[in-house]
Picture (cartoon, rainbow, N blue to C red):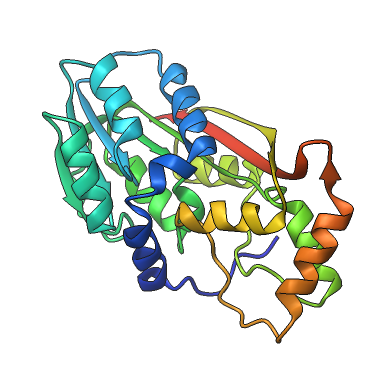
Length: 254
């Protein structure tokens, strides 16, 4: 799948700033992803860089498990950083776009990121920079969303000649980028989770409330309401309507 030609980073930042207060309520999928990510780390690092820390859920897990590690946590939404700094002590929080972050070479034992890399405008260059910041035998672990995420919504929008505007990379593409950055011992897999909502409107409100909605293309009047009608009709189950999340999980070593 082709990625969107250009991400509006300022608009994405504003959405996550607005979502900071409600994020923990609506980020059920993101919390599960963070739980699995922490479990995938086998070594005890002394220096950790977390990218896209949000309100600090993953940061808290890292702090609890790796009590002696120095942790730097980065997010480009100031309101998210404010929440995270209240939640987790003894962490250096930085407000910055991770694609513009100044990185020391061979500095971190572990770089982690959960539910963030789908927002990278230049994933190849960013992965290469991160690889250079890993210490010898340092590890990179991250999770992101794969292309089958919200395939139900994509289907009904496609029938109406529209698309969400954000194309998501499959695990195989991320694996290629990691190998191209000189990383080894690459492990990549994907899995799907399905969640139920009362109706399509509730599903879209949940996504928007977590800051994750992205639709740069202006829809014609009535298009969204028609898409929601089709969604409710086609993807109804006993508990409401279903929505699929494809999670891709990768790890690699320098």
